[in-house]
Amino acid sequence: MPEKNIYDLIIIGAGPGGITAAIYAARNKMNFLVISMDIGGQMNWSSEVDNYPGMPDLTGIQITTKFFEHMKDYDIKVKKEEVIDLSKKGNICIVKTKKYAYKSKAVIIVTGKKPKKLNVPGEEELAGKGLSYCATCDAPLYKGKITAILGSGNSGLEAALFLSKYSKKVYIMDILEKIRGEPYLRQKVLANKKIIFIPKAKTKKILGKGKVEGLVYESDGKETTLKVDGIFVEIGLITKVNFAKSVKKNQWGEIMIFRSTKTHEENMTNIPGIFAAGDVTDIPSKQIIVAAGEGGKAVLAAFDYIHKWDKKYGNKK
Image 1 (cartoon, rainbow, N blue to C red):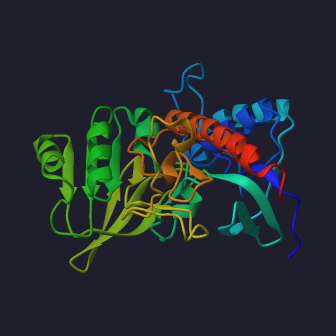
Image 2: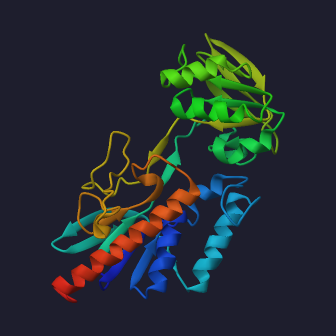
């Protein structure tokens, strides 16, 4: 596996956090590299985003396009390669892809999350056409309509409560007999007359031609068709950090980061020189603007770390 010359910084991921970090790195004339299999990440899932300042009423893809155009202003290129391993040898970070081994003084992991899939017929075809993985993003599109939430954990209950502000009826469906989630959320959901819980419901198929028209679920051995205008999958998200085996994670697989008043420790993982930002970390708020802000924080902390690295090690490789 050939090796490349050492970089100041390698950014793994090109969602809002990674793009922000890359723009900051470019403005500071850093010798850096961005590696990602896509551009935009979870932003691309949203059919409408109306809470990003200065860019109202845009789709997630439109916001991604604006981010990408900003990157082009600084001639930032993205290596479309899959990272398979991240390690540190001495004072050097080693990022391996299926093609190369890249070396750097510091790394920022901003790979975000991906939703757990239902793996049922119609899911892939109707994703973004009435089937969504983000109720916070898309709920306003279903004003006066009927929607269904698949999953009754905390995220599912929060999504149902949020959707009830717009939809005239919200179904919560779960394979379990009782609603899950924290007690205070369950109490709110059960008290909401717009929300209907369907227990022991296993989704078998998403229905629709060009847009969601309903779904088929099985309960007690019987299949039922439910007509809805929108479906929100809330069965959980998983992090994309299998390559970072030595980085400490919490019980949900999220990277644990420092929140310190010392600039060089902000957003750092348990391994000095390896930073993380956005939804892949244990920060509680998973939003585009938060991920972008965290990407900015991480790269500023990385700058400080690299400056100290240069003073201590010079340009050793």
